[in-house]
Length: 493
Ligand code: ARG
Image (cartoon, rainbow, N blue to C red; front, top):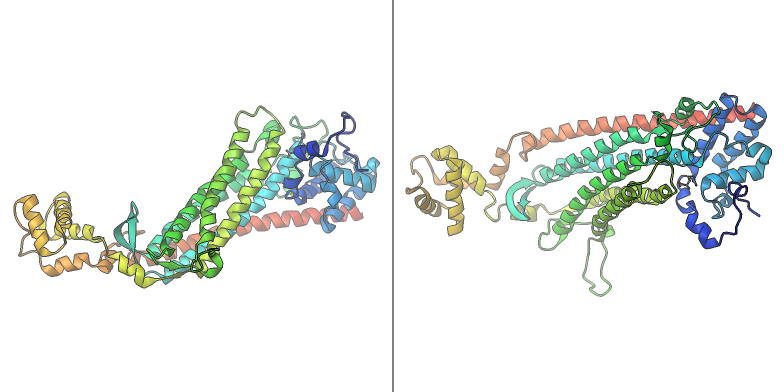
């Protein structure tokens, strides 16, 4: 018969299966179980270093924990009779090495600091993984931009044709946004990767624990000073969820555009069949379902963030069981964000863009009218507002040729455009879509020159971001490798 070692002293009363399942965090805890083994190993090492536990206890404890590390955690530790995986693992240890030894592991530790540490260990990995997927997505976008520097397309405001641009310029807008998402996640990492351990329930412990040591061997960058804050804060999770929500708003915008672009109205892009579904009744259909689900995942992320934030709102110090309910939102949010980013990358990599259709639309709806107004300013010395009115009036009257422009100029200024300084070729040139784009040479604009230099900048930026994240991942891996190595050595001694 399994025994809830935490509960048996103070409480009696039979719990029904429904009660146990309601109270248990086991479903979510499966995702922090590996982290829990690491925390237990580090805790025992710390108790050993501080001479709180003697060798006779430390050796078998570490050996049992290393078996869990090497062979995996047995299913019995995930039984709902335990409120959580921390109790499940402790009960398993007591069963395997006996209470005389196993019953000493939890000295100076509480599930409160333990779960906070596990969440932080899990989340720091998730943040690094999310960053690396974002890097791949940025790389794909930069490659597409290189390929489509000369792919002319309409740019929109209010979803109306506005001014011509290029696909490269359009896609790089997203790359820039995704690089800010990386920045935000990367900044959050430094607040995620702090250790709550040694805080115990909230008031720390009278045992001479070494908080810096245990933080260091688990690869944390530092210690959360105040022990009450250490167990009760989840702003690190809120921060990551809110950053992921922001990221998902960007992803949902790109998905929305992909959906629009793939409609037969636009015909700008054709998605690989693998990313599409068909209809159970309309045999001809090819629907961009992956992009649609991804667009909706932004709502799920915002929901996860909202649920977590509302859980924290008004929660008194210090640990409250409400905190347990935040974990599934966090894990679900992180998972949805990861899958969305990675699938979006695949969808973009395999999409084929229709250059002709984009070009066809680029000059529609007088999309170069602004260039024409600018040309009138340059050639005829008109104030911009006057030129803007003349061009606007000509559009209203039916076209942007010399006749309409002169008529418009007469109705706005009282005289036609000056014939000597303005040739028909000037009008044709100003209206030319490609010339319009190539004139835009300022930093970040769509001309070939600006885009080429932007691509170089973005590549450099991406490389620096990648290096930074790789260093962090390596530091974590080295810390955990060293932790396990030390544990093995001491277990064998
Ligand atoms: N399962 C709990 C959680 O996820 C563990 C923390 C401590 N539980 C407690 N009753 N104090 O938050």
